[in-house]
Length: 358
Ligand code: HEM
Image (cartoon, rainbow, N blue to C red):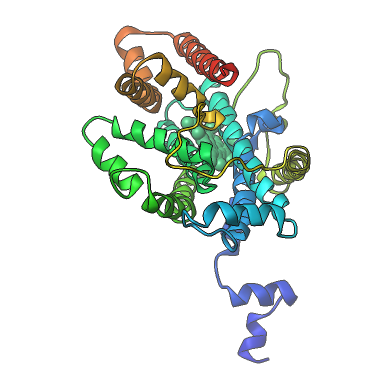
């Protein structure tokens, strides 16, 4: 028997494995990760939903990049051509838009589930912080993507957003200049947003996701137990592969249905082309920035930015702040629940208020 034949012992799978000589037992072990019982309910495993939607966005985004032209003179016309002239262009664009929006909803829901089940507590504090960086990256994806269309509302939305960035203490001037590519929103801004949207943000997103999943794998998912729930010892955990992976795949198929229905009923539209000389009477950002836009209207530019930054910093550091409060003042865990409800209601009220305002 030749050396090549020896390496291929065990039929075709053995032959294929010999072409890529890694520790396959380790891969099998990684796939057999025990998953806690409560992840059988989809609302507890919402982390997989943004992941699936991200894949849809990457695939549709690559398709759109072949036809989109990132220059102020041609951007709007290229989006119009994708929507009206290209075969299935409207569908790909609508899938991209809706998967982006649903991803933001899913990330928010995942954050709420992690917060209200206390899954951010020791030893998972770092993963909470990485999660928030993922949320920030997702929102920046949405904002830069919307600006690429170069219609009136998206153009003026970018103008307001860069004004907000300018009001950030200490680094605001440089940050706004970097985003605009000059003193005002102009020729360079679109190219910068395009580079952010298709180059920098995906890199950051995948690096953060890698870390997030690595930490989940190292800590395992928090096991939740509910009053009155009778789960036998053997049932407390099930296997990631194939049981949990099958549930996630099924959720993926249902999401594809939902995305297609949304694309058919509410296809991505196109407003008036951007006119830098004409401020529209009503500027509105995308819905996920309604809360900050309402805050801006209720306070002032600098105060709203300061409040958003302080709020964001508190949420980011909350696992550590809570630990400190518990050690120093013996604050009960229920305090975090009350604070979470108040914070979430505040966010919801500002969002709904802005959405119904003219
Ligand atoms: C692109 C966005 C995100 C993706 C794809 C993602 C993915 C996941 C996945 C797949 C899990 C495993 C269990 C589950 O499904 O809940 C998980 C757990 C976790 N995520 Fe995320 N996540 C994202 C954003 C966030 C955000 C915004 C936060 C919070 C600020 C966060 C904090 C956590 C924590 C602390 C865990 C561990 C939960 C536990 O042990 O029960 N993640 N994430």
